[in-house]
Each structure stands twice: as structure tokens, then as C-alpha cells.
Length: 110
Image 1 (tube, rainbow, N blue to C red):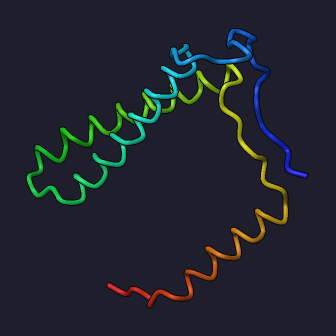
Image 2: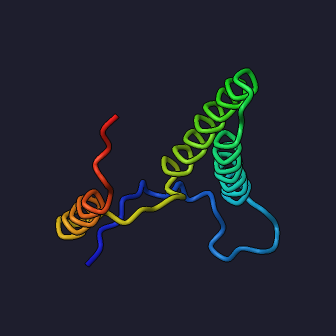
Image 3: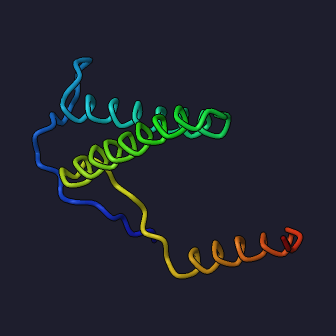
């Protein structure tokens, strides 16, 4: 049985929700937007040649990551964001999977 990692909910949400957006919906929407921005800025940085532009966008990306984490943490603290705790077997499988990936790459010698 999977263990969930979550804070207790604050009880501020209605049990049966109507079409209106509540605080959790608004923050969740902001969190999704910040994740989207992080992804876009990361892809853009991979394509930038201009050093000054790269530095400026990297600063924006760092700020966006910080904002994304703050929104996630706020949702987690309010009990609005739950995660499944990985058991030891899942951790071992993931470790083996990524360790096996290393064997697929040629050794790099400069």
C-alpha cells in the first residue's frame, strides 16, 4: 500500500465544489503556469547564443524556479498537494535504471 506525503487540509475548501474557482484552484493554476514557464525558459536557454541575453534569461529562470517552489510549498503546507512516498523497492529500481543508463554512454576523454 502506497504511503502519501501530505499535510492535513485546512478545511477551507467546500466539500461539493461549484464552477467558481477557490484559493486552491487559483494557486494550482499559478503553479501550472510557473512549471510551464520554467520549461520554456530552459528550452530557450539551450538555444541562446548571445551571452548577455543568456545571462538575463537564466536569472529570470532562477526567479521562476523560486516562485514555482514557493507556490508548491504553499499548496503542500495547506494540504492541497499530496505525493506518494516511494518505498525501498521503488527507490532501488530507479537507482538501478539510472545506473544502467551510464553503461550506454561512451566514456568521454577530453
